[in-house]
Amino acid sequence: MDGPFAWYLAGQLHDAAAGRAVERIDVAPGRWQANVMLMHCAGQVLQRVHARGKWLIFDFAHGVTWLCCLVGRAKWVVRSPVNDAASGAMPSGYSPTFATPTIRPRGRAKRPAAAMRPGLLEIHFREAGSLQLFGRPLLFTLPIDLAMKHPELTALGPDVAAETFDLEDALYRIRQNPQKTAAAALLDQHIVSGLGNALKCQTLFAARLPPGQKLHSLYASELSRLVAHARAAGQDALLALRQGQPIRYAVYDRLGEPCPACGADIQADRSGVDGRWTWHCPVCQRLPETPGLFG
Image (cartoon, rainbow, N blue to C red):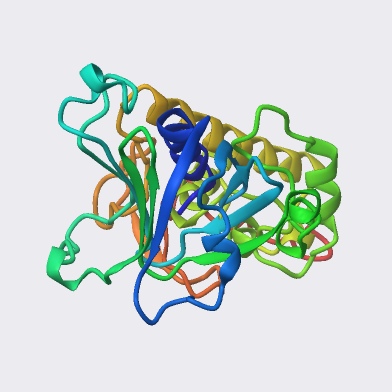
């Protein structure tokens, strides 16, 4: 899940459940029964749901925080009564089921509902309604004063979806990895956090950089342009989600289609050496020619 999706989902979960007392927490049989801190959150108030990078952060009133990263096919679902507006259980305008937004490249078959793993846990609120977690996410529970000091969070680079973004810090981090390719650097959450494969492709296209180009071969102005477009891609994606609009990708998952800038056929490869496919335009994102010693 890209960071903007995590930020958008955190806002949805916060609006649906923040300030409500937890009635009980149902944990799936055979899964994490030993984690008693989950059970100890029953009877407490969920104060806040927010995000950092690709992590969702749940703060409870008794000083416990959950850190959740939706890896693979994990997702959160908001379940509210049919007459939620009348009962006051959930904010009006919510559908009975809200699923985590996902990116699935065109042409890939949707996984059958029957194949989805059983619910991992479900948080029931006293005023009715619940939050249900599916799949096998990363989930840590720890004291609230230590949550932001967790290694998974402290190592994150500047967040492309956050309201503030430290450009100089991002440039410092990217310069510490001169041997990385541009594609691999954008997926490294220690450099900039919140970019997934789709936004990586969008950033590289906007910056007009080939995915396989090494960072040490880029000028300072090109590094600045790369980081600035990464930030813009995160902000544009989050804005589109909040407005209920589709995120428009220039090259991602558009193999063989014409480039929106030059009309050349879009290609896909793994030149980024990151194990992920990168869609790119071979003309707009061409590797620069290296001049000889005498020109």
